[in-house]
Image (cartoon, rainbow, N blue to C red; front, side, top):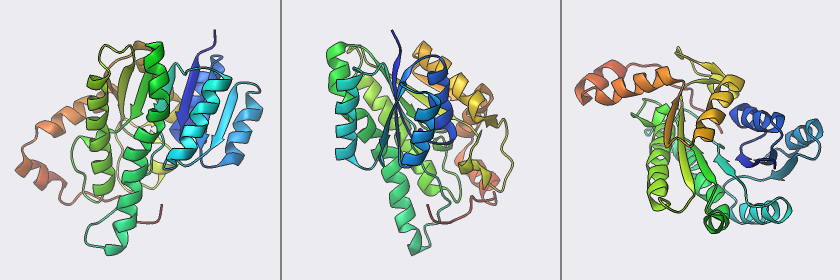
Length: 254
């Protein structure tokens, strides 16, 4: 029986790489993304395997309808991956960045909740399935110039832990994945070195293995896990001194 997987942000970057990895293994994929034309391209490449839903993950009602449609046509998913995310440089001193702060939090945190919620009751009834949240190493410490992104990913890590504990014993697993740097359009604008950066396909393959093992928490690549541990252990005065003049991600429109 084919694996049934739902992925948000599936039209480009890491989401597309995850979708293609599952599709090439014979899975049925519910692909959620804003750009319908890119979903059509994916559907044409894998005929009969892709159920495309052109949606923004901020659209709770649309996600409810998409989930109901996928379950009716394919069945309860084995894996739901909340991957959709946005990133932009932000600075609190600029009032014009308020909208960027709001959008980053809405997509990266509330979008994850809205992606999981429509599937959860059915997965509970089946007592199986895995919910996967794509967080980030950026959530381990607050990065200068990335207040919105760091805050959103820290919130995602805590939310996913809460969800994992809530679902303990239900048969539904929760996997938190914290990537380091991945070669996508999101990182292409970063004006600073990105250690241990991975191609999206390589990152997706590693994530799929972690999801298959149903690990509670994974940092990919593992080297960034050590970087994260070191950063979390630094005393605040030293962290402040080391990162005060670090280069910032460019401010701009989402």
